Image (tube, rainbow, N blue to C red; front, side):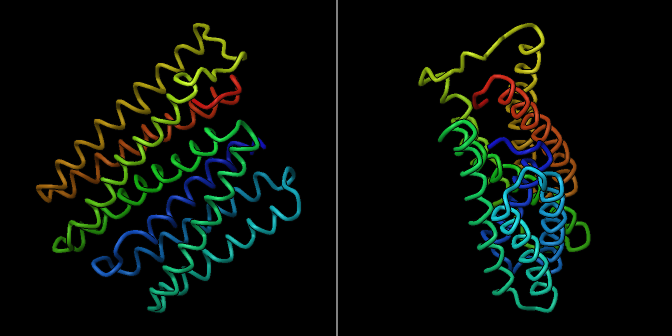
Amino acid sequence: MNWPFLTDIACRLACGLVLWSAVIEWRPIPVAFFRTQCMIALGLFVLGLLAGWSDMPMPVRGIWIGLALASYFASICWGIGLPKFGRGLCALMALVSLGMLGWGGYEALGPIEAAARMAGAAWLGATLTAMLLGHYYLTAPAMSIAPLSILIRGMFLGLGLRAVTTLAPFVLGQTSGGMNLDAFSALWLGMRVVMGYAGTFLATYLAWRTAAIRSTQSATGILYIALALLLFGELTAMLLGRSWGMTV
């Protein structure tokens, strides 16, 4: 099943946000941060639902509506000081949305695409969450650097997993007959590799180094760049993947 672009990218971003909200330690971070995370996820789930409404069977629509409602209630739980319930709802949403991404990818192009979508969600979520968390250090400079460091390590992990799914079709000889490496496609593939992988890796490394010396303002600016490069790379991969009929 090939979801519309907006539905696909919205699900990956929302899934990543709630996934890392459930994974990172919440105690050193103001709970308002997690409330904001859930509100952003709510907006993304609604956007994905509206963009793909006409292509979704009723059961899938129900799951999307359930995810939107769960993110709303999770934001309330974080807001009224019930972090355990908020964290539990985030974990539940992460599992469901990861399952949806895996199922959609498997139906579209097989198991490698399923793994690629889930790895992409983790990578996007870690990057976006790290960038948003960086802003909190501007008003709370004494906050522990550990959560930001964990998220940046998560960015490295997501990059590695996603790179494996990009290389796998070539290594296993599963490239599609629809792969047409003309000048235009070669340009996009080059940008996908240079900006989506090399550029994002460099930005992530620089963010890690600046966070290590507690230069959080600089790290946040670098994370903005990392997110922009990552989004460009993933959108390019989605475009090429749909054109070639293979995971990129």
